[in-house]
Length: 582
Image 1 (tube, rainbow, N blue to C red):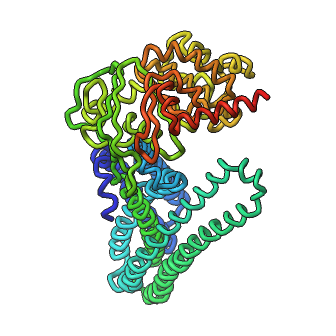
Image 2: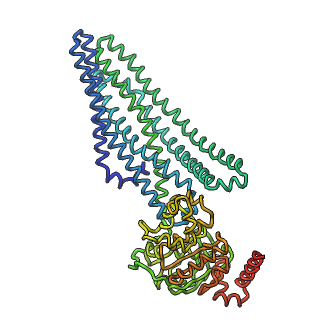
Image 3: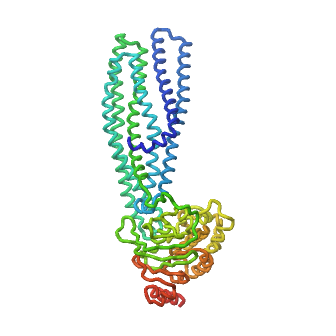
């Protein structure tokens, strides 16, 4: 069970809870061993004709008292062992979430959301069962097996005890043989469940697209195939369990048959008393549970081990973006940006996304990036945010290499509006005020007015307290985009990056937003990424990118005069505007 070694810090912290739980479990087991002795004495008293009403009531009271103590003991071991397993459940889920938050975007490019969700649900559930009920049954079966065998030897003799124990070595072989199969097959079940979860999640998110393309039948057939694969994996696991558990019960039943045959003959010969036979029979009945529990223990531990291996593989993943060992003590940035001969290739790719890009932007200036789709504009924005790490000595903020600055300082100093405006399933106010625990009074409304969304928010059923639905589904694309702009403006950062942030609004709304932004932009460094010339023509500097390279550079007037790609794009958009007016 090497997979569980990663849980050592948890066990070091909570070992005393497990120790108390195991202590109470052993107390319960000892109390249970007394009951068969009382039954044996009761039978002997009855056989000898010495049983009176008072004696019978005394035995009944003792047995009832023992039952009450057993109930109390079971309460405490459940609280300590199963309760600690619940703490493990919480700790692992918290650790997993925090670890996922620390990973770089390239990790999520390679892993599906459904698989990660399966880690947080099925895998952690299996580990909790292994470290809760699994430990209970392991301790219980081991102690009760030994204690019961000793008690059987004391009340009868070694021959009867040995005969009743003959099937146990075969059981040990079965546990070892089937345990490995359960481990392998349960791992495949978890992988199939991850695929099933991912398929369901993707279809729920894309249900509107599926319906608009009339692909319901095709997606249902796809889901049926994934669902069948999950069932097949489950059935392969069930087949092993279906053989394993009855086999354990058969071994237990075989012990009973041997005991009845040989033990009954011993009673008839007078070798042992009827009371000893009754006690021995009760102990053998108690031995059935530990023997069966061994099967459950192996089942739980192998399932938990398979899930822990999957989690350990995930925890072993490291972010490609890491904090500098000794980051500079910079708490805030003024906003100057310099890029020197930047060439960047995404992990796993062989083609550079940016090649030999250079520019300098003083604090308060505006840089615009224009170019075809895939020319590297958004890549530059993600490098400035350090969602990916650029090569050392290529990007500088306020004269400092971005790799030497604290990650928190870099990201807190930048207000970013991505191409795809993601909103959380909460209120408008909480989406706009994402950067604050408690936003300053009036800050959200002021940002919403600048983004030209305030009036529409006020018109919603609960105004700023209106829930926007999953990913902002109750709002239009333009509304989502403007709320994302308001979210970046409410942060009041020294650097603002707008990555094609006005693509989902009409030209009239765009002009109103730009008018509101001009005053805001004037006081901060701004990076505008856009396809519309109207968005970028007021920028201090414009770069035209093509296949990751800067092919044109200058102001709006200079680029129009050059007659290159920018001029062609400008003429085309002027023509489109004229046709719109007509």
